[in-house]
Image 1 (cartoon, rainbow, N blue to C red):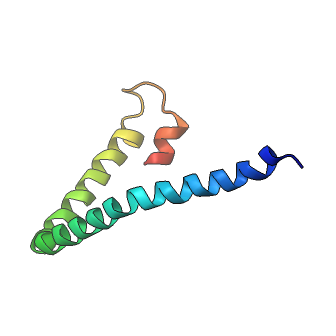
Image 2 (spheres, rainbow, N blue to C red):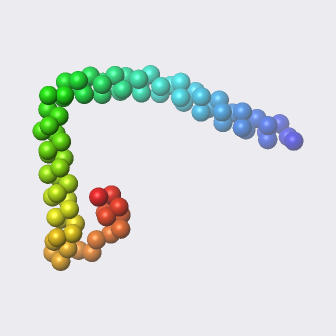
Image 3 (cartoon, helix red, strand yellow):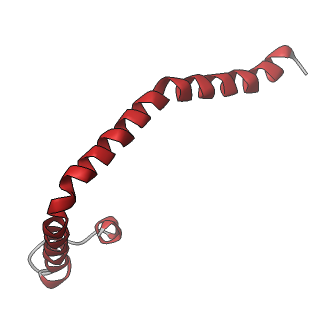
Length: 81
């Protein structure tokens, strides 16, 4: 084996670990921010659940009931729904 064949996997591992070490603090800050937002939005939880249900019904109506009014549905739009 040449040196380059041995060094390439080691360099890939070092690059992955350095990327993880670089971005990991931002992930913790994002998780703390989302936890704080969830505590503050706890009082609005029933309203948010109701609005998500209403939006799901609207999406269902647009996707299945009014199928003659819009262009052809793609399998991606059905899968995302």
